[in-house]
Picture 1 (cartoon, one colour):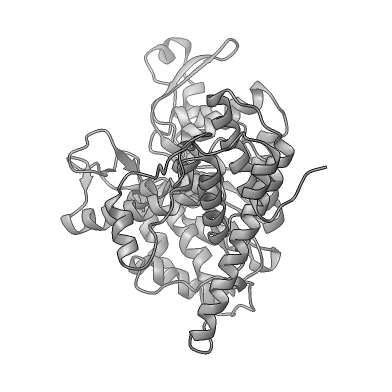
Picture 2: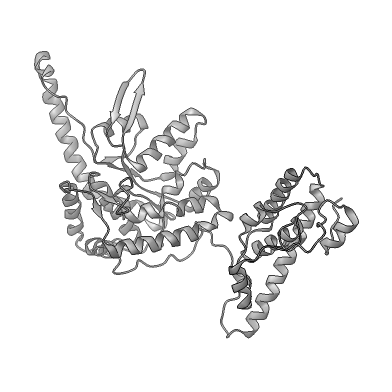
Length: 466
C-alpha cells in the first residue's frame, strides 16, 4: 500500500535515501530575470518542461534536484489549471528519466503518491491565494477558482460576426442573406470565403516574407460549420456554393460536348487532336482515385463540398492500414498544393500539376468531438477552421439578394496571373509578425492539448491565405 505523507521531507528521511540532497548549499546560478521579478515582489514564471527535463536526481538544493523541482513544477501546473492526472504523469516521467540517468531505482507507487501530494498542496495554496485576493477585489470580479475549461464543441453562445472586418461584398452578402434565411451570418461569411478561395486560381499567390523566396501561400481554405440541425448548415452551404456550382456546371457541359466531338473523330484525326480535359471547380461524392482524374486537368484548384464531414472523416478511418494512410496522405497534400505523382499498375502513371483542394462541410458537435478524440493524429483535423453556429431562426419571404457576391465569384475565377507574387505592405508585415509572436504564445497550450496547439500552429499560414 502506498504511503501518503503531508510532508515529503519527513517521508524521504524515513523511507529511503534515493533523493537525498548533496551536502552544501548549492543553489541555482544567478538569473537577472529572476532577480528582477523578485525585486518587484514576485517570482519569474517557471518553464515547467525545461525545469523537469533538467532535473537532477541527486542535485543540489535550490531548484535543481528532484525534490525542489517537482515541488515547483506541481505548484506551477496547479496554478495553470493542468489536470492533476496530467501533471502527476509528467512529474513521474521526469523522475523516471532522471533516475535512469543516475542509474538509480525507486518505488513508482510511493513516488506517484508523493508527487500527487505536491500537486494537491500547490493547488490548495493557489486556491487560498485566490480567495485572499478576491476578498480585496471589487464586487463582481470573477473568481479564478470558478473558471472552467471551455468545451470547444459544447453548447454556448458564439460571438457575433464582427462588422468592418470583411470585404464589403462578403459582409453584405453574409448579413443580408442571413436575415432572409434565418441563419448565423458567421457561417455564411466563412462559407463564402471558402468558395472565394476555390474560385481564385492558384497561380495567384502571396509571398509571406519579403526576403523568403520559399514560402508562398495560395488562397486555399478548409472550413467546417459545426452545429445541430437547427443551425441550418446545409442551406448555408447550398447558398454559398451556388455561383461556383453554376460555373462548374458550365465547365462540365463544355467537357461533355468536347468529348462527344472527340469521339466522333476518326482514328487518324484523333492522333493529331488532344483529348478534352476535364477542368472542374468542385468535388462532392468522390473517391481519391476519381478526384485524381479531375485534378489532373484542374491545376487552379477545386472545392470539395461535404454536406456531412463525419462521412468524409469516417471514410478514411473506416479501414485501417495502408488504405487509410493513402487517403489521408492525399488530402493532407491537397491542403498544401503542389505537384503530386500518381503511379498505379492498372491505371498507369500521371502527374498532377497542382494538387489543390479547398474544403467546405458541416458536422454536428458530437461527431466532431468523437473525431477529435479518436482520429489518427496526423494533423488532418487541425487544418480545418471550425465555425460554431448560432441556432437558426425563422427566415423572411423576400426577394433574394447577393447578386454582388455571385458576380464576385465569376470575377475571381477570371482573374489573370499577376506579373509576380503578391506581397504584404510594411504595415501588414508588422501585423503578421505580431500575430506570429502571439501564435507562438498560444501554442504553449500543448501541455494541456497537443492537438489544439497543432491547430494554432497553422495560423501563420492561414493569415496569409485570408
